Image (cartoon, rainbow, N blue to C red; front, top):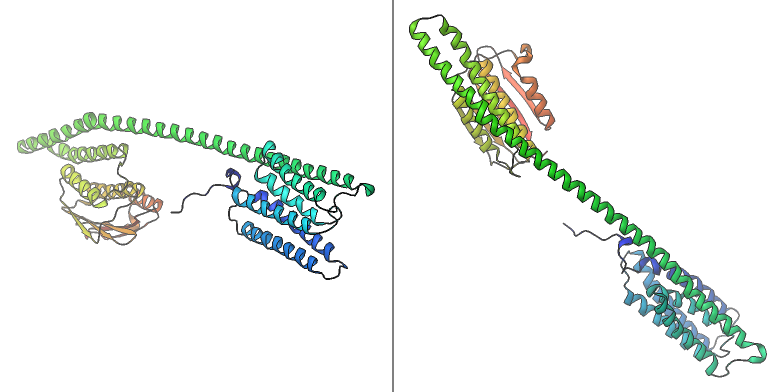
Length: 411
């Protein structure tokens, strides 16, 4: 599983967005500048050297462009290095050319200053570094010969250029601060939304815990109260039925009719207890569930149940386990209510992603096409369909019944 990635707006150390601006501006200025210095100019060694430095800047900008297109992060160190190299090449170009004020190389200061101020957008830092770069340009333009030509108002041109350079720095700082505030607002909104979601999740967990505690309380009370009473009632009915039978009383027949009803009521009560008690395990074992339910059915109904397992018993989701339990419960309940069987077999056939549950009895059987709704087959079909499985019923009068339910192990 790959680690989560930080959204661009939340990564304040990533300068890709800022450098996109620098890349676009640099491409325009490079194209314009290379065209101007080569337009109608005779080939000279100086021009070749200037073009070589321009080509060097083109290569640097191309590398930066590729990194931006590929979506790779751009650190402050990389952005600063590119800006320093820009300024160094530009200052060198101005130094080796004549007519310091009249040359066009100075225009490359603008993208360099933009990149510098976007990398260090704090006003004091941006203007401090900018002043160093601008001071180098002023020193080269004034200290090296031929210097300023006051007769042609060269100082006015230099002042205007310096003002524009500072304006570029100010515009870059303001642009970055505006973007930074938007990004900070976006991060704050995400944090607030995450906090709200965590609070909702915490409340939902508390509600679920409270519901589980209440269900466990009800299950315990039913088990300790109603289930024990019904169990005692069933034992007393059996004892009364046997006593009445020995005396030849007509009451025996009525009591014998009540015994199955008492057993059925006890079984259903214990089923309600299971429904109230959630499956705690994250990977329940269907074999254990089937064997436990078979033992319970045998104890309550008095019918032997044989459990067979074919294949490797795989774990499954809690939802499927609960559905499996209810399907098996409904099948066994139908056997006790209607089949008049003497034995029952439960088979689990595991495959890679599913389990086939087969419940077979040796009872009186029935015609599936004519089976009334009271047989509970509709409930079995609905539960299996909810889990994405299929059901087949095979039976005929006098031949017992076989119910097969195929269930996916993972919903």
